[in-house]
Length: 141
Image (cartoon, rainbow, N blue to C red; front, side):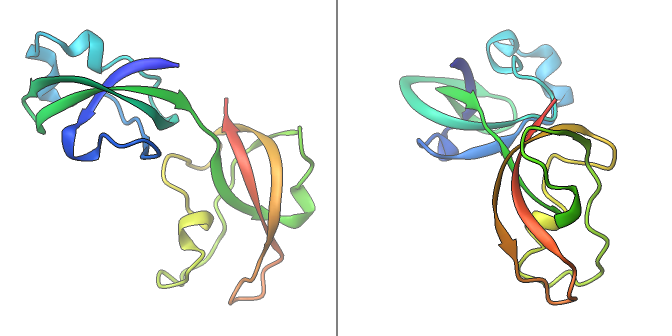
């Protein structure tokens, strides 16, 4: 468990986000060390909300929260699914931006070549284009 700050409107248990690093405004903030303290590119889940707020140059108000790193759901080719194995992430090749599976085929926080570990196979994905895909939980390394 780590402590960090998030926009007060988003400070709810269960909220998940990918840390993209600090904004330019954070460089002059007095509490940046408490806020910009997570690993860039990793996904986190809020597990607790503290009763402490601070002014934020970006969000207006930021609340102290407890977070843990969490796995990233992603679709991958079924032939590459071996729980426990390490892979370099390859997003699914598809141009159907309205597909209900797009959030898994091109998941937020994962890009081509990112080293990951397959934690678990969640289940088969019904691909509209007929690709043989499985939904997995990935831990970004």
